[in-house]
Length: 604
Image 1 (spheres, rainbow, N blue to C red):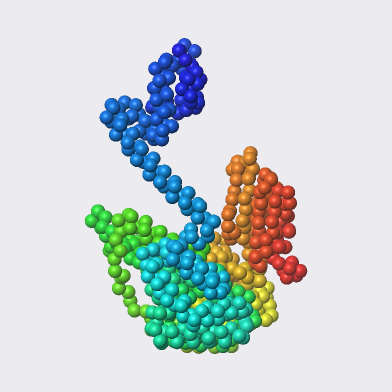
Image 2: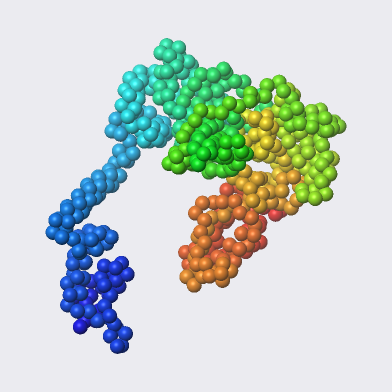
């Protein structure tokens, strides 16, 4: 009789493997001797060798039991099936090897050969590498989503680049993208680009200019890729819109827009990207029959947000919203949710009939309701206020509306009674009223420095409709004073929303608040024997910078002092500067506070 170790040695496996085969029911467990040890006979050695041989041949363990007891014909059929599966796996691995071998070839990995050839042709013609990169990044999603149309599109592109005027267009575009946003020559270059587009559209039709007829969501994704690669393109697009052309990926003719008459370029510190202004939304509707009931589900893509609603026919609808990192992320989430519903049996249906949009000449206060309950603010034409005397909940507060000249749009401002100061408010309104239009320029937000501090505040945050909860079809924005350190100079809309509307958000309605600085954290902290403060948890990690409250800075600084070597805590402030703490170089809370508040606050 053999021990388990001897059995494993004779069969050429480990003791652990023997126990595993016992657990899977492949090898029967023998009876134990009077000492409690397993004892195996010679038949167990033969059976174990057969199991090992089948497993090493690639037979899944789930099939091993069947083959051990199969007759000759069944065994042959099963082996043939396994052989086919292995051959398929070999072919797949060979394909993977080919892809890996092509990694060094750059563009060839993600693009069809004809697109790579087109990009190489642009380089040979001397086209700026930034433009070639934008073209490449745009073709990657196009080729992935519509591979059967690549040949058609490439035929048009080859025809176009044979035209010397297009090459001149690309060269002019290169010059424009190399200019700073305030360079006066940028206007002249925009004139040249717009003139070329208009001439081509007039001569060959607008399809020649916009020749890919792609869907708007994909166009927005490709625009986001282009602007990330070549940020100056944003200013160029603004100038082209003033000259009758809009879009980057999907060029379209529009009535020329007027340039912004207020010279804000000198005072603007940051402008968010265009989001959620009504013309960048898409809604899809779905239904499913379920046990005699009809279930509705809908989803709206609105810039960087996805809004979902669901319910049963005849009942109330429920909903939820999610803000994503950027437009590309939002589009992926939008597509993912739709595919999930389709797999769950939902079928897309025609859009619902909706009530007509409010007329353009309807007064904003008529849409808000209770307009008669608002009183005019002395000394500020177009500003009204209503006092809400709540003793519970949010407490008493003043609700202001700052109305534009045409009375169709405006800004909301809420100030809690503690801290409400009429002199400060009047000075604040003096600055805000002339600049009300900033909230409706199509950007999510503007952080604007005040010419002189108002109380503790030195900046104003203008929020567009996309950052305003009830925006009445894009007619209402939001405004409030801030300290410089409270909103990041380079914040995207996602970060601003997290700072003013998320959990632990800035108390923007409280004018006597303590400073509420930007706190973005990224960290990777590990301790082999566990952090006592985290009840034995051995690691905490945040891969990307996210908005956190000050209590997390305090905790992070405590944990970094206990963490194993190699860990880090990175603190990012409103200027996107980073203070790094490590086990080897810990930081104090006082250091972190001075860093977050900035020199102006700490000096005072």
